[in-house]
Image (cartoon, rainbow, N blue to C red):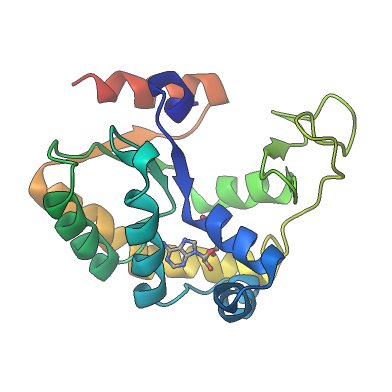
Length: 197
Ligand code: AMP
């Protein structure tokens, strides 16, 4: 919603990796077992993906990064890429605060489109026709890493490896903590409001 409103690309490293898995590329073959178990794909691979993606012409006037950076080395490398490249403005960094038990409930009801990547929630954002993607008509699935075990491991990776990224940006004065509870529209408004500052 943010990317659409500001007419910039939505760059999700998870989507890029899922696409690589679907294509069966070398990257996909390396990433698939790590993703399935809920671990993090190595930093060097992730940084290569982002470097390549940010070099595309559509990213010249801005972008929304979703799922990156997830570790402090990724954040440091992103900083270097932004300083080298066109992104001279300092980035807006938003941290959505949601208790783990709410995240687990949201993920349990999440359904995704394996073809176009659209995301649904069985109660708060259901598809118009049960189990069918509104956008491309494919059958919806639960992500292979939305199992209880993988979700626990992803939350653990988040607390250990990604929370230090928030502190990295807080130290620079760039971080905005945002209450992630409430409806999709409410959270969207809260994020969007901070972007004007
Ligand atoms: P997501 O769609 O953002 O939930 O990402 C799904 C999975 O892809 C994660 O659980 C990781 O295994 C992998 N992944 C996505 N982004 C990154 C990243 N920046 N660093 C490491 N692994 C990532």
